[in-house]
Length: 555
Image 1 (cartoon, helix red, strand yellow):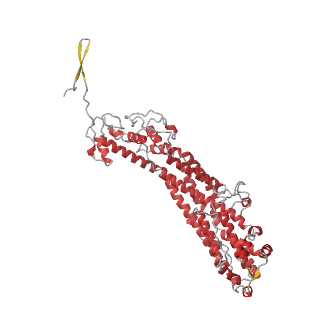
Image 2: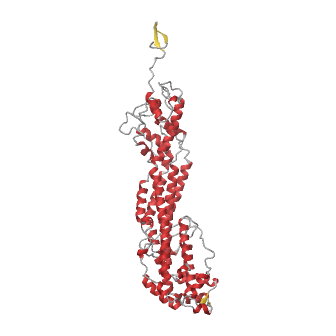
């Protein structure tokens, strides 16, 4: 076989010099590439047995190659698919953290409300018997509205709680004054004296502070878990730009075309490609970290002064205490109401003559706290929040860390200890360019990915705005405020009881804020026939005595 195909004759100083026009180069086998290509599930019909000229290649170096045009197209699509899966797998931890913890917290909170309602119902049935059962809708409506607020309903917490106490006052005022007939207009007047007379003592004010702050914190926290879950799910589904697709193909599969299917990319090379492809995701990091910090702050409130579990568990006892206060002060309250609203009309003789059943006192018995339903979801809020806090801390800086997490995978790169025997985008050799910093603007000189730094990803910017809005809500919730309504109230200055905010615990800047527009039942002041029948069965004097005895037992 000749050592050259043709010759060019050049006259040099009278001599004839023959040079080979093109030396024949022995083509290398594509056996390893064929094996690796088939392992990816592709047909061997696409791949040559030996290297061919590479002028047809659009992404990989146009040298002798084992890739046809069809192979380059298929491997380019494969690199896109693998990149998308890599990002989704790498962000799996943060996504599952928000999904699973949202589910746990939501289950806990709903069960906590159910248990609190059941506990109150059981206690009041045992303690007040038919009196409670005939007026139970007042208490049922309270829990219905609390649940509706938690699930994002249009509920004004402050107005709803004021409404509850006003309705309870109307019902009780009739029961302690069965000798009178009260029109709806008169009862409307009675309810206006709720704040002035404080018939339930200090319980409504304290409970309002505790319930409002705890529910705002709990609802905002679970909303934060929802936003974190949605943002993580959305951002983990990437759509590589054309410049990124070219860089991915060049990094992952151009070694195939060069006959080096077992040579992995250099670590720093991989980092520059990933930083270019995930530049917009890295820009999410700043707002994401602020969001996580705000979540951790609200979590601390849930463990401390805004502990929803400590507020809801004893709510039955606190409402019962308010009822006792009303009964103790019934004569003074009635006298002031009569003075302000006028003397009511006497009730029919039959109604005023009725007395309480002889066995009424048998229904009173001490309440045993051990009979309260077990804690929701078999755990406590403190343990649940501690678990969530630990997972949240691990999710900080997750988006800027994506390139490092992906590139440190041994199946992805040659690693930092093998910098000479790795693919640098052109050949098996050291990768020399410097590593780019994080974020879109820092990719202006990225040697591997063409990034237009003047066009931020609008989808990522939407997620940044969603995080910013949620962070603002969390900061307000941390201070006991609901961001939707900055409605300063004197209630915030009082001392709390139980696990609520005490003056020496909560910062003075705390001012609770209500939610959206109040949802008030227009028929709330209609006293049904069952409430009227209750009045026939009671004598105010004996009732007060018996209920005073109940108070001592319950205490």
